[in-house]
Amino acid sequence: MLAHSTLDDLVTQIRDYRPSDVLTRVRTLSDAIKKADPPGLVIELPPELRYGGMEQSLLVAMYLPALIARLSLLVGHELAPGTLDETRFLRLLRIGCDLYDPRAYDDPWRYFLRTIFEQAPFQDDVRAMIPRALLMYRDANGLAASSEHDIERDFGAAFGMTITNYLTLGFALYAQLLADPVFFPRVGWHSKVPAFKDLLTMENRNALLNLVSANATKFREVNQELAQSQSKTDRFDFNTLFMYPVVDLGSGKCTCPIMDLLAMRLYDAPYYELANLHQTNGRANAFRTYFGRVFHEYVGLLLKDAYSDASIVPELGPNQPGPVDWSVHQGKCSILIECRASELGLPARYSGENAEILEDLKRIVIAPVNRLRVKQRAIEQAGLLPTEVEHTHLMMVVKEPLLPVPYMREMIDAQLSEPTPYHLLAVDDLEQLLALEGTQGVCKVLAEKETDGMADDFRSFFHARRQAYEFRRNPLLDRTFDEYFAELGVPRPALG
Image (cartoon, rainbow, N blue to C red; front, side, top):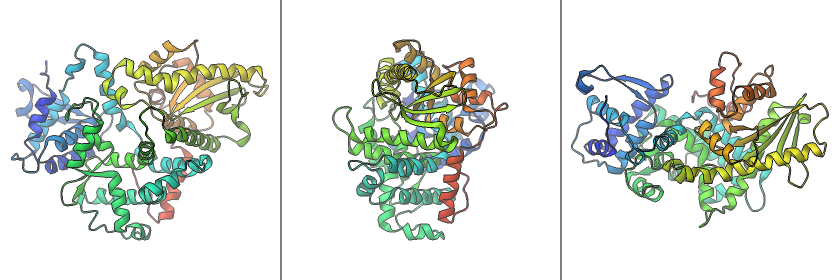
């Protein structure tokens, strides 16, 4: 049996090395993990690092280099005396792979949930981030914008650049860091692309870097503000690399230890930054309420690209109990769709406590599903569905996945006012569902999902049918991706 390691063991080891050395090793490792087949990168340990001389390898997923980078920025110092060679870095990985959670020692489910949320963000499709951001913050925002809120306007006022320019500058930074893992973005930033050259003013560079980068001091300050445990090193605290994926190593010399996190930040920064600007002492947040309408319109853009206009009806249903967000009619099948941009909060994600999770689920899914069932009956009683419809699917689309889905579904379903068959999809699930070749038909896929198990997540469902279904990238995202880079005059990049 392998020995267990504590977080203190890992922290003690990391203190011996300069953050600049650790982050360089992390970058090389994260690039290798990105290229590895799921579930992660297998590394054979040298004899001197094996337990009792036993043959042993490590399975390294992306959460581990992210954790090591975070801890190095929190506890490391550039004057640390140790030399981080390959063997010593492997020792850090071995300790990291062997961590356990003493606070969840008697509660394996809590440990499982905390680990899921530590690892889950790295499952996201990085290539979808830029087109999704353009469609959501530009196109869907344009459909929802009001005099009170407008993402383009409010983002420009707060950060001094348009959403499109922000994404363009961010991609230029991403491309530069791919080619040159350590460089000085505030001093020199060279590009032969005219669209980049015109935007790469010192003012714009600083505005972008203020959103995506931090030095060690700022990193520690933000970590302390957001830490759920209020400690500086707790494994399951929020990893500030998600907010600041680019690290200033000193004197403006920057690196990005995990490139995927920069792509993710380019996508989510407008949402989170504007939400933070409108945060009050309670749950009320005017921007998050507005963004619910933006998310609604984004789902509509996906549906309208996949179906004919005649098949889609927005806001279907009587005023009491209220209309559904979207309805789709396809032959003998109808789909009633509700959209929720809300997501699990940091206390629920990083504590792993059922009470915290359930409180968020009541707001995100349980209450909307209860209403959706009532809305379905009102729609049917009012005769608002086409006469040929014989079966209706209920669908909840949320912005972020609620993982692990089967466990969350069990908690949700136990709280519903009546048994309700419904499909729960994150937005990336919906994008993939609508991208399946038309011969399979969305309603046919949903019917198969109902037969095989409503509580299973769509990611696993799709994976199990990787030979049976014809998968492709979502056409709307794919076109937006291509059109964006064509306008820049940049070859289509391979982001993932």
